[in-house]
Length: 96
Length: 490
Image (cartoon, rainbow over all chains, first blue to last red; front, side, top):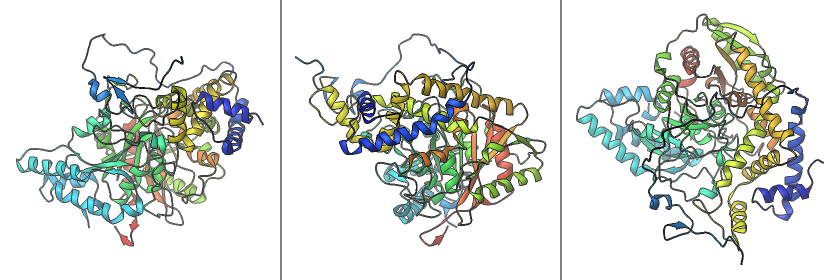
């Protein structure tokens, strides 16, 4: 087993997910099976191959820095779970 | 014959010739929805009143003697991961259950500019993660050819609606086969354009370097018209191509004489369904009889494409889906601090497959594993693409099955994610390489489920793909056939 339940818990924390106690075994087993499955890549020689993050021959795409109309504040806030005075409202971030 | 059975190009002519009105047509398709939607469940949202209003406006315009565009007054549907201003866009996820986009996706804007009738938003695998539409947080969609079977996915709702006659046309999205595989399963035409050909602005991101929006239609002619409408550069998507868009209807020419068609041996893999192999090989013979030159080719890294894809796509998804944090839009489940609130929200509102892919992605990206998994996958991605570059030095298009099997039974694979991932074996290489591909109906399995022929082209050469697809389609009648549903032959 490459991944332990402890590793799985760490990945869940990184992902801002909590796995119910009863399902940790299942997720761990599935991740291990997945890693075994993709292990066929390790046999592919890639010493001098550049990684390809996307297929396009573009790097940075620039435009003139001009102000254009953007989404109205009320509209931008229209799907907010909680808002106040034109801002998104969230639970306390910094503890006392 | 009912109106819903006709493709858009036939209905367009009927509207122009005043043989029908858009309201008559829209009512017929809405009646079809009343008849079969309970069995198919292709939609998440149906905008009935708005559809009838749009239809009436088109009829008024025709009444005033004004000319109409191709799609004008013709009812269609949009996959629920494409933003529609003022109309709920859920991605079939509970986390976006009440999300009403304050803007239109670029493709929505382009489609709306044609004044079609929009019937609603179609079902899908949650966040487009899946190949069966069973991962919808709301309900599975059923295959109109056999409602015990899946319609494929993730654009299963769009493909099922077009097949069932509950939409004349639809938009889907394709990250690893999500347009082509459901088109194959449902016996309709579906095209993934070249990466960059169609703007992704307003498409809810799954894996940004692989996602592409495309048409799902009754036939190749409708597909070409739809691609004409949605293609083109967009300043809101810096990855959209600035290369000029040709008129794709010019490709609707039945001629493949001298066209070099590559047959990759790696796509006829062991474990492939015998009916699929037989049917696709017969279609290749047909292309040869029509004058195409068949060339055996090799794409040696095909067997690694699935592994590369299933590391890259979840890695990008893990990053893209960080935005569902309960702050600016989407659902929120309260917690004592912000981290707990975010964790509670995501844990309660994401489905199992989405969570699985987020965690695979974060694992593959995390310190200590990044080189072995994510970086390795990106290197193999280049090798997959180079296979195609080499092949296209010798051939004009590549022909292969769209999916290794016909539609499978609902529930058959849902508990085995790895088996489900194998469904994408014939489609993911194109997403990795950014190439265009179409699925065209080419026959049936022994249990009369549709089978699709995949035609793959060079980057930005959708024109040749469409010509090959059109030529093949004109030589048989599969695209004209509709499923029996509710005991009634269409």
